Image (cartoon, rainbow, N blue to C red; front, side):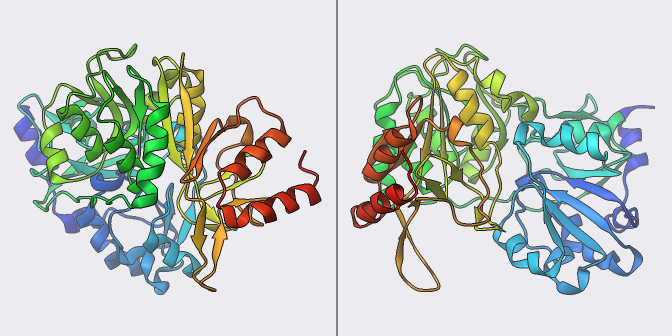
Length: 435
């Protein structure tokens, strides 16, 4: 049987795909822009036929009824590796759960606990050799696809094809259905004055020839803009973004001094603009590789001068970082923060950088409060151990905590806190005997 005949035999309608959902089923969906949006937009329609269906997701791009409406409780749970605003809003309904994880272990940990019954994600149309392409992510998809009993792909011709670990042969797929929706984009976050100051501080720490990891947001975008005068940078990153493409096109990122995959920008997921998607389409200079490889700290550590740049919500005076919760309320996720921070410090000449604003405005009271605190808010999740924190940067400067005593850490962190809170922080540090 040729590949086109196999495709026709596996082609079903979206309604038929939805009817394959059964009670007590664990379903894994593709990450972010590769989630099967047509399927997830209509999953609530089978509510009355099923109970206790768990849908594992990461970085949801949509606000789907199967978890956002209270009457879905008992029928569906969105088990998320990363919370987005709609998931946070739905949490009180009992329709969402968080899955603690280090990103590079997310697939293996899930399989060891309970392999998925179904994997469903988006892919490009099949090529003449019988291969679909997972396009924008290989974070956990390949491992969980291979472990699932049922594999369904939402086929969309609008997605770019990428190199790396993104090919899936039709022999690995049970069913396909077709759509032609636009690829989700992630709006570019403009950098404000604080972002630019922080970005400039971080850029001063990055040497020519370094390999970098950045994320999405005002601070990462400001860092990218501040790197325009650097030379021969490389990319080994969890997430490939628009800011990195600017640096490639400016000749700043060449990947010529990398020790792993020289000449190639390596990522495990891609999210951004249509321009970014056009750039990566069939581009041999970009490789989207499995997350258990890209984010493995021991792999990251093999890069030369690997620099990891992450943000956090709150840091205590000893260096503990809470990057994913507000008190005990889940806000986002650990993602690859620990993966990349630890990996960068294993690298020859590598550096790990944590960035945050010095203050935030309490929405309930309107008061300005410090993000550098004597102790973390009760219930706060420690996303990055103080043992794994190196550089911390705010708009007031940079401090290095690596190898330092608690007393020296306290002094360093107070020095980059907002001036209005330094006296209070010193008083609390003395009271708690943080020396």
